[in-house]
Image (cartoon, rainbow, N blue to C red; front, side, top):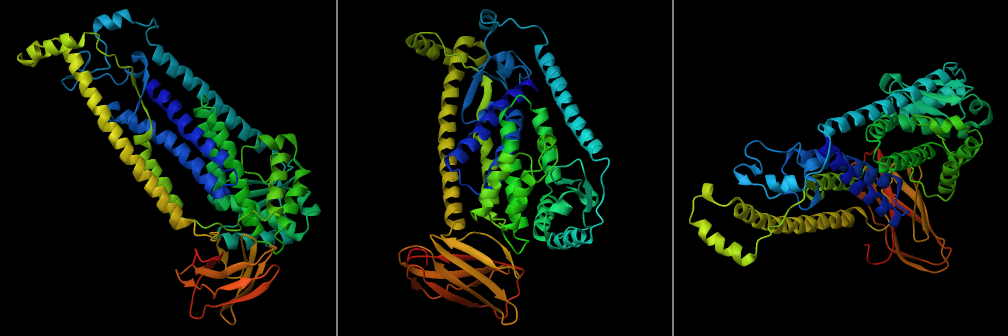
Length: 511
């Protein structure tokens, strides 16, 4: 167990640190992609040490040398000391070497370390359960909401999200922020009492839509899992960062979904601005999904919505999933193996070569252990060359896969946002704004493209992708002068679809 925990610490630092660095280099990464990156990093942090614990470290591409008493104690094979499968291990020192380099550690230190980890992890899990119990006690005075307007809004939002049954709606005076509780048939949304009196109809709908989105995404279960991981692996501080970033990405995605369910897209922003004044200190430590935890984060989310950076309904890109699965498959090959540090032979090379020629004539059982050790060390060098070749091959395959995903999933101007048939879609490409909607009576898409820049934009055209796989367009190419507006019409006769996505294309290179 100690070796696995050490491997987990190294691998999780590699994966979570890489995720953090990549997102720091690209700070404008969309919330859904940020969420995928962090989920992939966490999954790899658990998968790679488990795979390495079940396989020999000889199969790893690169090694992290550690003292033998850490890496070798749990993976020491049966048979003669220093041998595995009839071959001398280059990383297992001989008796004399081990005696000379012995590290003074109490017997059973690994068991003590494992026990200490279990005690700390159990204590933190108990603390998490205590927080849940305090929240339940805090909400003991909550009552069912009797406001018919709020109940109708929640029922309508639940139908849009295909949530059945409709979550229970309650109110509490001890809350400063709405929260989502439970899962399955026990779903519940608890809102502050003041929300029913101080928010207008659209803001209340946005508030409820945000919590419905949490249930739609199963965030109560996700957050509980993340909290358990954070408690169990308390010695990895990057897990706290990952949980914080995942919570923030989830809040942004729920903001986007809620904003798409109201007629005024700024209602979600005004709702958040109002809630920012209600947040109290206890809300910051809420162990369940809630609309507001910190005022600074709420202000950032308000600015994001006001700037129109949200995606009302991001599509579930198969390329993103395939890339994540591909990375997880290749992750064990890229992750370092924790192994005892190798020791190079100390004999003079000429003496070794001369002794080898003599030893080759003798049966294996009569050969010198030192020369046997040297021979296996050279075999280890050959294995290293083979692993480096495999590493380069895997790297090239990964780069080719990522390049293919980027070329297939980032078509210029394609936002990847899904719109319901009764929603008005918007898209912006380098200052050209598209607004378009579906007219069910004429079975046509009607809208406009507007050049908001100060220069002429050439070869402007529009495409629409339907849920049934049909692509409408592109429309004829037009040149838009500065401030010009052009009507757009695309015929959808005979098409049955549930949602659609739109994008603007510019220039001759994207046609």
